[in-house]
Image (cartoon, rainbow, N blue to C red; front, top):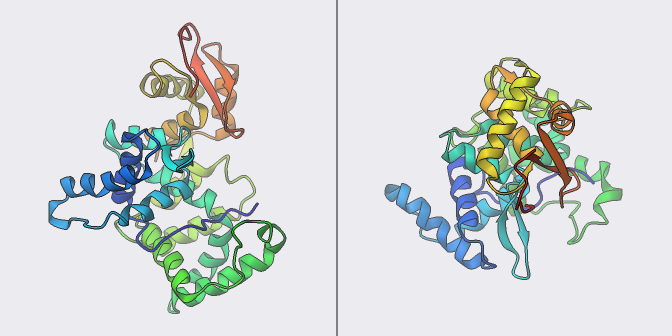
Length: 305
């Protein structure tokens, strides 16, 4: 299935608002999406009384963007928003406990989850800089659709072959805001060129944090030593799962965000260390792309997450 963010609105792309949306979802665990949407402007207005948000509907843009990135999931009969164990949990931990804006993690998730539309879009943005981004995105969408039509026609609801102007505006404004504005990642043209280069590589997921850091900082980090990975993975477990298993992908994100821009860890290396170290034990996750891990000797009474 092609990687593209379908349900994205023009208000999305603002990182601090994204944080408060994820926070609101994490604070209300009941199957009540209405209360989650209502909490978002309350949290934002408390932090920013000079720039209050009046409409509860504004939460939907940021909640949906969080789901597209993989920070939130939707479950239950009422489709309430829930914190994603793999990347939502480390996102909040880094933001709140370590007082970091985890831009490497966010750009990495953006690149992975929007790769197939970003390639034709950024190609045009970089080579036709003075032209309307809405026009460039319409062209990129047609190329994306024609290249992936066999897969896209199987998706419900139907993925359109052509975008309406209003829908196109939502796609363009959110992506541009997230990638290029100071309220988002804040990349310049050279940074975008680095993103475009990495999007075309075959081993993108394994080295996605190398790609994100190189695009943001302009520097190429070295690989983190195995014993340092073990230390950070253990640290993440202590914070993220006092009485339960933790996500290996969550630990991988945590390791990288705290190590960059000097060092990074591949996904394959991190997973192998967790699976083979005598210090850890692993269990399957409900997410087939992830695994759960615990520290040996501390599994009594644990519950899976």
